[in-house]
Image 1: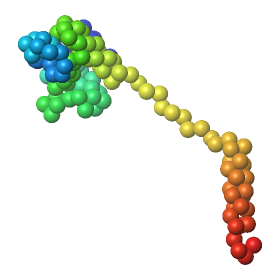
Image 2: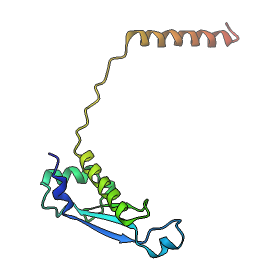
Image 3: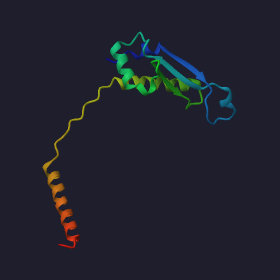
Length: 134
């Protein structure tokens, strides 16, 4: 059910802008921040079911228009930031299609129940001895 990531990369658009933070004069004149945009609604590669899965699992990273946005400004080079963003995109898409195994509830062991009851009785006895009417 995982879509072909190489085909999805053809539908990605990149935007470069000036990055914030420290870096002196270099950061003020070079556009190293990269923003990846992927339009989930208008994707021709994804099926309707795949679109639903992505929209549901990645809802916090998707705008109201259905555009998945990922930003990177950690590196000092535009090319490295582009690689970081693309790696994040691939990881997010593959993680959204990973099927999680459901946790099976286990039975509480008899020894644990008995220990809890034993400790309750000890606590009750301690509190009973504190009372004046004992």
